[in-house]
Every structure is written in C-alpha cells, then in structure tokens.
Image (cartoon, rainbow, N blue to C red; front, side):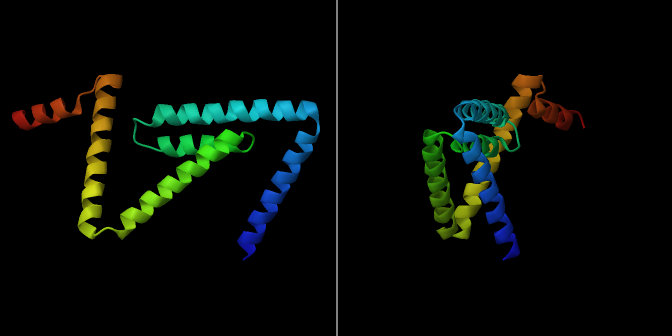
Length: 138
C-alpha cells in the first residue's frame, strides 16, 4: 500500500513538473526537443543491441516510453506493443508444457544463431569453427 502511494506521488510530481514546463512556450519547445533526443538515443542504443544478447528490445520499448511522454504517435505505438506482447504472453501461458518447451527451444536456437552470426561478422570470431577444430584435435 505504501509503495503504491509513493508511486502515485512520484507520478503526480512528474505530471505537475511537465505541466509547468509546458505552460511556457519556450519550455514546451525545449521539452519536445529534449524528449525527442533522449528517446532517439535510447531507441538507437536498443536497436544496436537487438542482435546481441541483452536488453535490446527492452531499450527500444523504453525509448518508446520516453517518447510517449510528449508524442501521441508514440503513446499509440506503445499501447499497441503492450497489447500484443500481453496477448502473446497470455497465449503462451495457456499452452501445454510441451508447446512452451518447444517455443523456448526455438527462442534459444534463434538467440544462439544471432550471437554466433554477430560474433562472426562483427568481431571475426567463428565460435562454431573453433569448437569443431577443438573437437577434431582433442
């Protein structure tokens, strides 16, 4: 209960601060520019991290959240994304353990291939060739 009250208080302070900034024409333009640049940085870093293991998609969605503070199109896109991720999650929860296992295995294979290709073409490290060479020589 206390945590919910603190979160509500934080959101209220943020909302009040943003409204004060938007009340001034110069502040409104400066806020749009700041939010636009900050969101672009977060989305760009997220897109750069998508092929690597890590929080690439999470950063892209966080960047959309930053943009959603000031841009209506980002709010709509974020709502669309949340709806579809939520429906996908609910669908997966309704599936049998076998189906969930297969989905997890496919996801693991996909991430493994992306990591392998990223290492091979970004850093020139062919992990598969090195593993095969190691197995052949030992």
